[in-house]
Image (cartoon, rainbow, N blue to C red; front, side, top):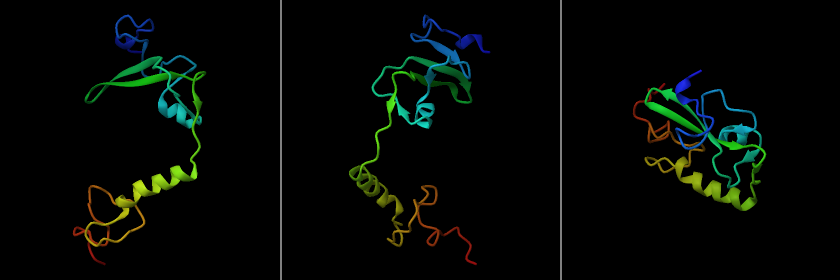
Amino acid sequence: MSVRFWDPDGTTYGIPTYPLHTAPDGLGTRRQLRACGLRPGGQQVAAQLMWRHARGIAVAYLYRLDLAKPVRPMTPGRWRAHEAMMRPRRICPACRRDVGYVIRTSLGTCERCDPTRIAA
């Protein structure tokens, strides 16, 4: 355990801080909440996890599970908005076709128009 990031009182970092994999029970990250069908629901950050990362120090915020709210269901209007948002990402800028999948930004075009693709 990294003693450097052990600050359960929050005296050093301002909020309770724990090393990676040492969070107390009853707290979870946004991803952990989502996996349980929950969301933070407007609550303040309760604590944080800190660890060394290749690019410096990484932080993950923790929220109280008992204050978390259920994820809002997708309504028909929200589905329409989501589809409208995703539609431009499926249109190839070269051939202007809706290719039916999200075009990778690293390629920039659909597979059919990709100049690096070897024709079989």
